[in-house]
Image 1 (cartoon, one colour):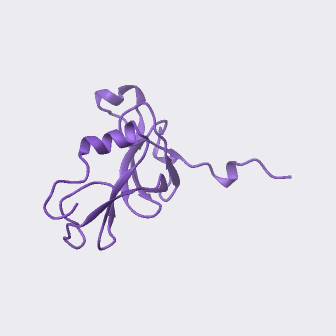
Image 2: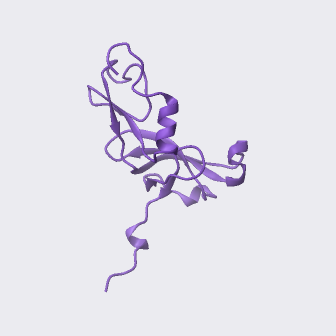
Image 3: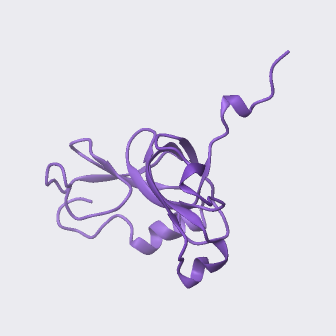
Length: 137
């Protein structure tokens, strides 16, 4: 975003990016701050010079909660986790993880990856771990 012009893309274009194009995008300010959401000013420096960037599709859980009373759209998916993910390379994005039944199913700092699905929203899945890999002979 340069000057006081409109954002590089709309919220609808951002949603279409992850739901239809299966990619995450965000903005980097000239000061280096990286965000997954658009805004008119940088929350770090107040600047207005942003560049649109592709965001990483992997990261670590920064926070989560298990949702047991969902909206109508997610009625058949409950319970599930609502998550905040610190993406590799910077930026934080909110999303959800299906199949999470209890808080003990996840751990803060756990590796996750963007996993596009048929439901709306930014969907994540647990990254396979080295422990889950078959032993090497």
